[in-house]
Image 1 (cartoon, rainbow, N blue to C red):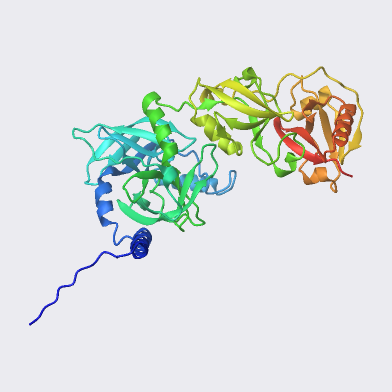
Image 2 (image 1 turned 180 degrees about the vertical axis):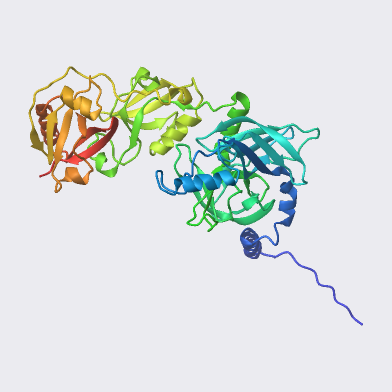
Length: 489
């Protein structure tokens, strides 16, 4: 029997060798793409690895006894006495009652630090941590941050605890696989899978940066971790969007890059210490661009008021548009709040603003937001009072100078000057922009308004400059905002 041996010969020409290399490269790319798109056969190995670090949290709180049948019948109803007697027979009466709540969390260090949501433990008298194997340990609160709904707890254990590490949430991509773990509806340890549905979601807070996921999140999952496929925590499950209280595939997890900064501060100080710039700001809208010298796009944060604080000390003015903060571009108000909040208290930062068509660089030494909150005055001193009782309709607005009586009625500072809007033509562009009777116009084109003549002069200047709108600083209930009002007839 004759046998033949075959061997793979190296291509004899450069062209053939190039073809082989290209073919092999194409195969490698296809294999990598298929591997990236393939659904995992099972999450079992990952779940088994990370489960020991996830905990159930039970809280208990003593609440005052009810003094009446609140929420059952209207106050003063003839049935009120009946329901009060019924409650007394049931043993409720006015005696204090103990209530309990359930949530989730996860261990982030071998020495017992645990992360959860603030709303899970808020107001609790006792906090009990249940581990995967059934062991229970009491926990104490190290610190909380209601702004991001994060709380840091601590348990004492004789043995090192299993823990997980935070991952970089900024690298999470829409479509990536994730696992949510926790204690949904009090059913005990549970795992659900899904994908990252969206990034950078904002709900209601100043520092919101939520990862949206369709992994099932229900009541009781609050405070639990959202894992990537490397077993790293990239989010803390916090909220769901639901018409019925159950999961419909729209859940939100606070991004880990926000959580880690909060946790580090809570661990070090027992509280958060965020930077404070000391300005009131609003987004720049498309219709404001044409009215602002040197601005081509609706970017940046418009300064509406500069009370006493770091920004005033640095020379910032109302009407400035903040373009960059410490070298980072400021796209809008939310971005600026995030950048300032993440900066260190006491740090001197470079802020570039647009003022009268020119970029101005300011050095601002940041204060601490927590100390400043609730202590910011509504406005700064303005020129002496002008009580001339004139009234005139301009651009659909009927305006009159502020008087002492008007200041009292509108809650305006005694030293604040401006023009009060006493009426608005409902067919005018001013009405479309949201201006209403009771609004106070304090500036036009970044210049103070004291009289109707001031207002007319500013409008004439805008027309002479060839612009189509005038930028007004409007105060309503003490809160300032800029409005770009068209001057075209």
